[in-house]
Amino acid sequence: LEFILESTGKCNLYSPVSPRHIYTFDNENMDLDLYRKIIADCKEHVEFVWPYGIGEPMIHPSIFEMIRVTRDAGIRTGLSTNATLLDNRRADLLLDSGLDYLIVAFDGATKETYERYRTGAAFAQTRENILAFLAKKRERRSGMFVVVQMVLLKENITEIESYRRLWSIPGV
Image (cartoon, rainbow, N blue to C red):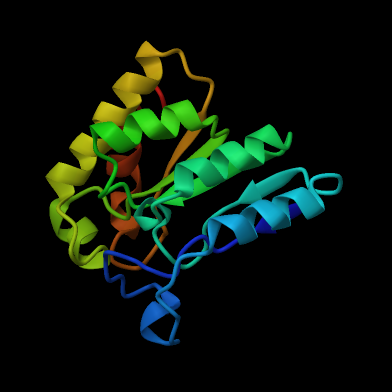
């Protein structure tokens, strides 16, 4: 049994493929005490928790504590991020948190395509954030499973092979 718990409804980017432009979401963070209660109540029945949904989890000021709470309850945990906020400090916190599975959303192999689908993000800076994170992951010999993911869309379908080459690197 898996749970998806929306840690935050906030997002720092605009994406034309996100339902955020179709639906209205409350831009709020889940209360940490409520999260702790949910995890305590379900820990005997849940195998995996995803503390993210429509928002960018790196925005939540307690996301790393949420991951630790989940791990301390004996539940594996995963996260998806756009990696724009994955600076050195957050990379260390993420690696220290005990996260099992990380999805990095990076929707294009070129600056033009990526920035079209991740409005507000910069291709080079976000890629550098990811590369620096992967270097730390390797240095620490972390067992965290990392996937770099591209949502297949008509404008990036021709970039599949370029994308594979771009991300066929150690740590992914």
